[in-house]
Image (tube, rainbow, N blue to C red; front, side):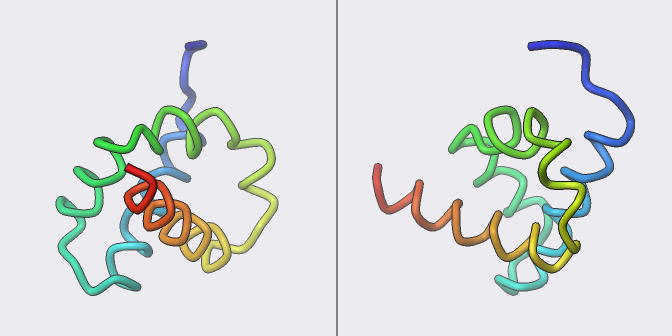
Amino acid sequence: MEQVGYNNIHLAIMAIEKGAKMMNVPSKNMYMRLKKQGLIHNFLLPYYEELHTQSSDWVARTTVETLKNWEMAQ
């Protein structure tokens, strides 16, 4: 994976924090679930250019929806 910049990390943190609030779970729990599914390194970080043009609410909702879908597929 190429080097990850500050903006990529900031977007991932925002998605984790807002997603956790939407799901009413601790941020650490959200982080661990995203990490387990590979969503941080396979969705949030590499697609920064596409995701950062959307609202933070949209990114959080999409992250939560994707997480639930990936967990169900396991």
